[in-house]
Length: 289
Length: 312
Image (tube, one colour):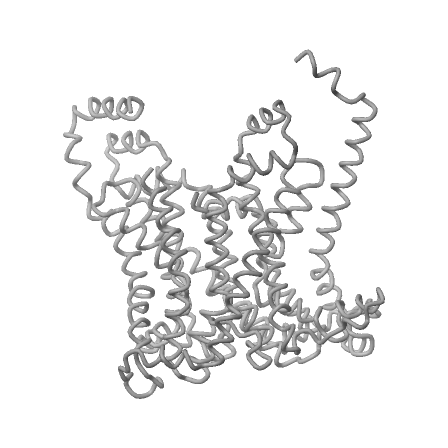
């Protein structure tokens, strides 16, 4: 204790060091962020250039034009409008359905002494960890047999089935931490399992549900593999697969392709900006410690 | 122990007036059973049952039209002589090491740089994290524009006098695989960073205080406090990264389809094109089994950790 004042550098030098440290931090972190944002800036700029400009000056040059023509091309003629609707038609019901099912299972497993409950929990999580490749051929056959091949129902079905295990696991961890006294009080008041689930546990699980909603929205919206496995018709494809179609249809028309990418990325970026806190929380909820 | 039992005793006393509380714990209401069984059956229908079929199909020859024919281990024997398989397996290993390794190292580096709460740090974190929300297809297209012969990367190289290094990055067999890894890394690093940021936040600052009092240097603090304290997060990150590497498909499919001449082929893309384009469904399933075997160790260790956590 007595030695510290003598060893510490004089106040002026310490301040200067701190200023240099701060400047160095902002320089390093700023450059890194700029490097990270550069491709995004490039695609935004390219999407507002005209085709003639891109053809004459190259994709990597500074813009010499400004037009929203690329967006119109991608949206109207490139099928992006239809594809975006398809994506939302799949993503919204899938998120709602998987979280409803997962919260019910997590509720039952975490709040009741079910036999084999840990085995069931890990079985469900294990299904989600399987490499999707092992399922592709059988799932496409299965949807053909059911007569839902090439429909959005098949995509919703497989996405719910494949994702639910992970959501159950995350919600189980969350619901387990809710003190049992709260439930016991409700039982004494004569509440049945449905009331306990809907009136007691679900309101308390709202933070975890919000985090998982934000996370699962982007996962399902961004999926490509399941879509090209159970769908065939171009007009039924979600935005990811349609973007690959755009890439083939508008070869080297980079303004259109860039506009398509912006359209495809916008919904998830909006979800992220709106629910940033939940989003980051969700990623960490999923991490098994 | 005392803490756990005390409230239970209380409720038992309170509940005793109406119904015996003992039977309640073992008798599970039918609705609760349905709550578990419905999701479980849906998963069984779309995942477990197809998975069993997938393993069976690996031992068959099947064109998708006639019935699958059981051929034992012939698919796996064929792999031994299949040069595309060898390339794909090697590329998958390269992918695991480079994509996996670099995303862990750089993600940790970014987390260490941005761990302290200070002015502007939120913006930097958001910038690094933003690509995580893009689909891999959109990511791929963004980078495809960068990689064009007249794109930003070549223009920059020319601009700084390195014109000799310009390349058609995606069309060259020697660079295609690495050119595909970069966009995947760009997207993954922010994700790993977030996991490490949470881990770093969980380290008790008292440990650093104590080390400082003992005169430990920055490096010693990192070596003896930060790294050991992060071991559980490391395990998580490692499983996430390995599983993600083996699943990687979208970015390669959108950029190169595994080409040119299979130079950027991964097991996942080879599996897809074998099954759905060459319609060799049996051989494709066998390739999927190889991917499963590679992922198996990681899946089991992840589940074991999950089991311990569910236990505690």
